[in-house]
Each structure stands twice: as C-alpha cells, then as structure tokens.
Image 1 (cartoon, rainbow, N blue to C red):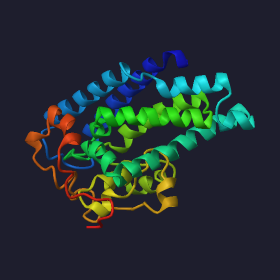
Image 2 (image 1 turned 90 degrees about the vertical axis):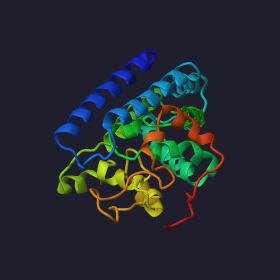
Image 3 (image 1 turned 180 degrees about the vertical axis):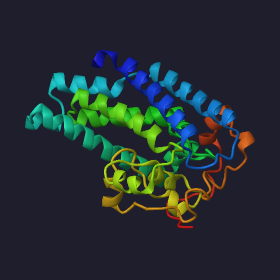
Image 4 (image 1 turned 45 degrees about the horizontal axis):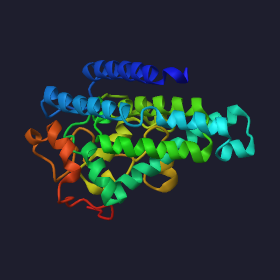
Length: 273
C-alpha cells in the first residue's frame, strides 16, 4: 500500500475536494465576497505548483524516511520496542501535535510567517483555502516531517495515514459549510471544525493567533490558544490580512512572490489588536 502512496493520497484528495465543494453549494455558512472562479483558479493553480514541486524534489520523503528508520532500527519507538499497534497510534498523535507546533512557529517567527502568510491572504474562506500554501512552505514541512519520522522511528503506515488525515482535514476545516451549532459543539471536542478554524483566518490579530490545530482540537486547549468564537460572528467577520486587501493583485504570480517582498507588514505574533 505504501508503494502506491501518491495514488492513494491524490485519489482521497480529489474525492474530498468534490465532496466539500458540493457541500458548500448545498449548505454554505457564509456569503463569499470575491469572484469564486478567479479565487479557485489561483488556489488550485498554486496547489498544482506545490504538487509538481514536491514531486520533483522530495516526493514521499516522510513515508520513505519512516520505512528507512524501520529497516535500520532508527528512532525512539524502535529503541523501546513497542507493539506495532501502539507505535501506529503514537505516530498519528505525535505528528498531529508536531504540526500544531509547526503552525504556531509559522506565525511566531518572521522568516516562516513570510511563507505562511500566503495562506492567510485569501479574502474568502472555503475548501480551496485549505490548499493555498506556498511551495517553499510545503517543502519545509516535508523536511520537518521526515526529521520527525527519523527521530521518532515512526510507523510507516501511521505516517501515510497521517498525511491523508492532514490533507483531508485541511479541506474539511476550511469548508464554507453550515454545521448545526449543537453538532459543532460536539464535533469540536474531537476534531477541528470549520467554525473553529475559521476564527484563525480573521483579520484581527488576536484571533489569527488562535486555533492553530488542523485535526485534533486538544492542542489548542492544552496550550492556551483556543478561542471559541470570532468577536464579530462567523457571517460578519472579515477574512484575510489587513496588509493584503486588493483581490485583483492576489493572482498566482503574486502569491508565489509574497514571501520575497521586502516589507513583512504590520503583523506580529506579539500584537493583540
């Protein structure tokens, strides 16, 4: 199964995209303010660049590293000889917490924020926002996960499943979908919901610096970064960054160039306005 990782991941990615796109049409949470066709073109074109970039550089490096670590006895889990089932679940939980911490660092450190702010420049919030990442950020993330796999001695199938979960949950929790509030309150005890993650895409810095989780919601509660609701409400809140409000200029080439702009903008992890 690991030998066909790329096919598995792409098939699930495409299936999730279709399901979420249909759900957004049937039960939207917010009225989108920007031309959807041009937004989707920019976001999906950036996704295609990401896929090609990773394909011709690192490929499936995280899973490959986990396989290599298993075959050579690398990492903590191999040193303590846990049963495979425990290694499998520890891998998923450990990787999810590590991605939470990476996300926090992407906001806290200016050099990483330069890359990550591409994701936050989207002026609307829907399934394609969950795909809007700069290829260099994807590249760094893949190296980070490979290092984690080696240090942990991660379970190869656990890494593969985590990659699938991460991609699918990113599409789900960026969905412009209406989930009944009573159901959302239950779901967000176990997974990050769209209403929970949407707060993170507010243009208010104190809200942007909250709800960093992608799949499990517990890390935000544990580390004190959880915020229940946006101050202005989900339908009225403003999405995006204050420094990037001109939709006409947020095309594919601009998104690729944003990390190299001289000014980083007014955003700072330490601000609370």
